[in-house]
Image (spheres, rainbow, N blue to C red):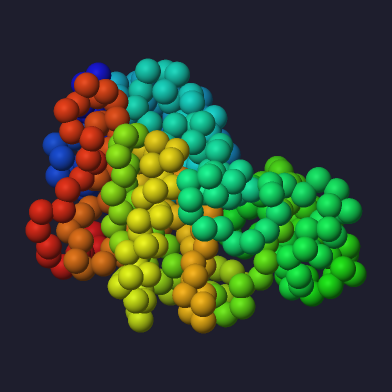
Length: 343
């Protein structure tokens, strides 16, 4: 299959602008899919071609798979970049793009489904030799099972949504009474937010730091772009991110990044992704908690030691993955360093 020549961006705002600028550096023609509300946006003005995909409501434009596919066909795009948010982690969207004979700039739908289920992702991490927070083996199917697991782990424990994100469907419980009362609440919140009320349990790691590792893969090999500190949060929403993570021992950094690569390789990851970990400064242990199977809103926060434009690299990864006969398996190689910039 030929390299990407025309890329449709199925998103809006700053991520669309970054993708367009990165594609331009690679000599790729860009097509901006836009809703009526974004007709005068910067992304529309920067793209080589712009296609209206519907009215302002996201459900009728940026979330409308048929409209995006029609725009890709109309503009003769050979690849689609989902950005982040909207359909970026929608496995059905990824499947539909590839079924239409186009390149999806991201992992295949099977990997999105696998890693999007956080309980299943824990199991994969454990099989890959990556440490996970002590917790349930998969989803909790009954109250009796939840009580048994919580008793084994020891309180406090954390109830988490298997299909969750953004801090939704999470509750910390300190005893059995709280577990019985809060588990149904967490399940209902997860069902309303994600259409999936499945839960699992994890032991609460006191005073843990939240550290994420950015990876790039081409379906055969994976590299990391080091880590970023994400511990400053309010209501489990990140307020501040910094790269590199401060006061992280070099040995821990090396092991953490190696584990991220190890897990991404285990699922033959393709595209840009982020693996999230908790780091216990007291014990110097770290634990995998989940993976974002998309380019991240914080991607510009790559340590200065790395010279890499992630939107461009993710497009290269997708293109190389499509070229199964390519002689090289590495999706990107850092050959020089310069201060990274946010465009």
